[in-house]
Image 1 (cartoon, one colour):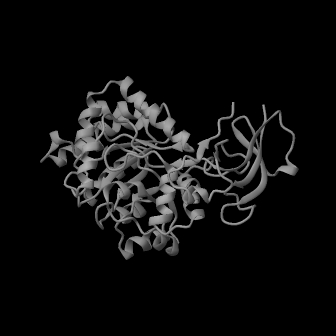
Image 2 (cartoon, rainbow, N blue to C red):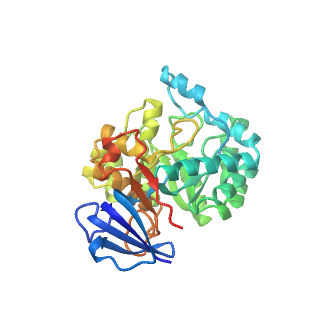
Image 3 (cartoon, rainbow, N blue to C red):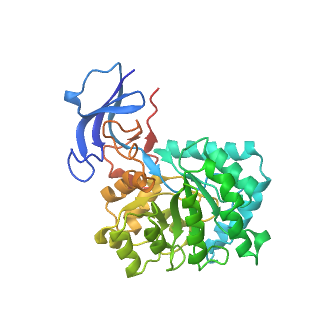
Length: 385
């Protein structure tokens, strides 16, 4: 059954056939059928449809694509957040607390928390999401995390190399062997991607050599590559990601000139996570520098219980505009089309015919209100039966 979405004051398509960098159509309509976009254009030219949904002069955008999240976990780390606000720096060490809580939780508890967070995201306009493991850090619990993540998304990421767990303290070599051996073998069938926290500045993360070994093992197992890189300091993460052709390198907070050049000339998307800087009082990435160099950018939430417990892509957009010198149009494009590029997806992030029917309605006349009215619940995913 076909459905026409009408009454659209401003439609962002990310389709180069239409006006400007966002492919905007005013007084627009979209026709959906079979879970796909079949027609986009001016309402006066819309073909007939079996039913109609009038959005009453609101703006419609492609659903947000949140390409970096950690949603399979138990517990929270509110006390750690409070301590950071009082001046304690973030170094990734608190992940061990989430690992303990996650290992102790039942499948039902983890599934319920995952469903709650995905529901939060849809209520704020997110229609596609990547979900990582990384809070089990043993074979049984990493497989469990990925199996649960697979219930909500096809973009599941194996992150056994999040940190070295406490039981392997002083035996980092043994843990890398586990991550690239039995854990990888068990997890690869449930995952599309492999990721590693490449951060020599963290006492529990992985240096460049270990990160390379882990990524190459994942690649041999048929997984696409992603990297947590350059969050706490300049380091090897960005250039390693570009060298290996990773789909995305995420954080990119501390970049050398060589890092920027690598991102500008390679195919790896730089995924920026401004809610993390907001929640850790760290410096924000310089998005303007990356854009002017020609790098491809995505925005994501990195929703997790420790360094940034926000599921809000509109907040990420507002912070990118206010703190990272992006225009509202650049930030929106990074939050949907950029996220799709970071996941190497061509069916989401835009509203061209053939795209998945992922539309987000704004309780506002223009996309500009996402940054103009921060903290106001303007966005929601459109539910079409």
